[in-house]
Image (cartoon, rainbow, N blue to C red):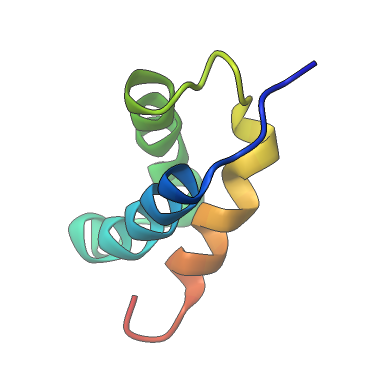
Amino acid sequence: MAAEINEGQYQFLKSLGSNARRVFGNRTWNEAVPTLRALWLEFHHGRDIPWDRVEHIVRDAWELPGG
């Protein structure tokens, strides 16, 4: 059974999405995903919680105005 996302991981994912939008500038979501996925795997239990379970959190933050 996969681990649940805790509050710290959730906040990390939101921050990852909103900050990535500024860092990646004019790049598209599809261009940014490989790097974002790698950061999740490296820093926040990506082996226990697969990217496909958390990608929507990052993308929602990416798409926010001013993100």
